[in-house]
Amino acid sequence: MPRPAEPTDRAVLEFLAWRCDRLQTLFQFALAGLILLSAALNIFLYKQMRLVRIQIPSHRDAAIRYAMEFNRRDDATIRSFVMRLEQFAAANPDFRPILDQYRTALSAYFVPGAQKAAPFQAAPFQPPAGTNK
Amino acid sequence: MKSETVSALLVLLLFVSALVAVWLSVRWFFSVKEMQELQFQQARISNTRAAAQALANDTMQYGRRNPAIEPILAEFNLRAPTNQAPAATTPK
Image (tube, rainbow over all chains, first blue to last red; front, side, top):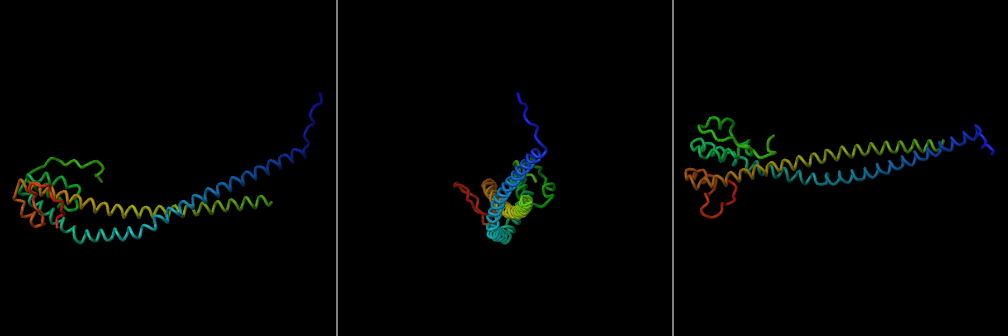
């Protein structure tokens, strides 16, 4: 049985050059695929960014209007209402539990330390889950 | 040689594309953050209004038991409920 001929150095080099070319082509295709993927990602990000940025001015205007209206009309009213109710609760301890329910939600409007000064100690208010800051 | 130039060009293109993606991501992140802050601000005001409204309603209910609170209710244009359901008015 005849033995297969040993590959010459030239044949080995040609084979390696062919493999190198193949690898380079594969690398270029992989790069092209990544570029396509990156371009798709860029298009997605651009559209999302535009979508949000288009909405921001109207939202900002609405938020400013809303806040200004609240500060101009409701804020002072709520503050004086809570203050009057605190004064009332100091003289009428049975009203304090009702007022204490809103101590967390309206904390900005309650006078600090008013609860301690009151003669009646209400049961500690349990805030709803997720409202603690 | 030509193949190497194409590879280098592709790598450069990918790098530029990645930079653009980072820039767009950062801008998107800050836009969404600003939007969330605006929504949070509105939600906080709404919650305060709702809490004040609920306090007013509870105070009106309390007014049925203790008429001593009537002057305060009158001062803020709130009326203690009669037999009907409590009125849903904000303190003015």
